[in-house]
Amino acid sequence: VSDLEKLDTSMRSSGQVQPPTRVAGGAQPVQDPTATVQQAQLTEEQRKERQRSIQLHLELLAHAATCNSTSCTSRNCQKMKDFMRHESQCKITAARGCRLCMQINKVLALHARQCKLEKCAVPKCHEIREQIRQMTIRQQSMDDRRRAMMNDMYSRSATQGMSGANDHIQN
Image (tube, rainbow, N blue to C red; front, top):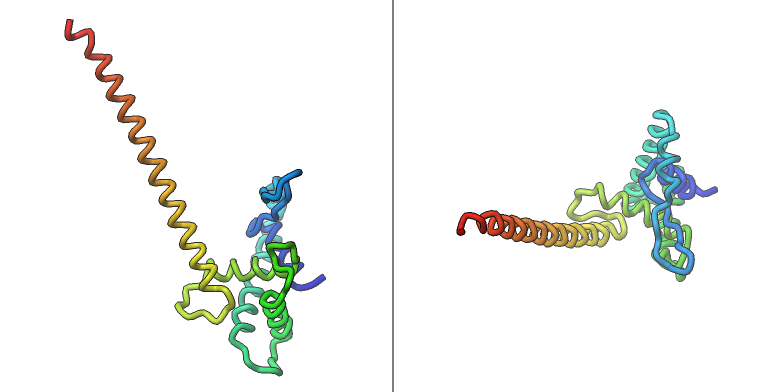
């Protein structure tokens, strides 16, 4: 079992990442309904341990992205570099089902959500943050349209209600 597989299991059961499952006859991922049940069954100690594991992987990712040493003292630096190299060179990719690519992409996404650096050395950090920013803008736009539509609907029903209430006064 690789370190990233342990992280993947850790992130799933901590609620950090919901594993996609396939719908019969379709290719759209849906959330695993058992994930929240598993999360509820975790003890506080287990949650803390998983969070610590995730944090250590994120620190290792940041270190490996900037480390140029061929004889680094970190035990897992070369492993993380190998994972990052795999993700950048893989012919299958996460989109087509490479489990290792999916796992490293989860770590990259977690890093990008937390990263505040303008020039980050972690691969895809800027790209993922830009995708998150665009998604947030789209979500806000949809919320604004929905809010405007509901306000319009409420004002119309209030206007119609008011005109109907005043009909008996005109007689």
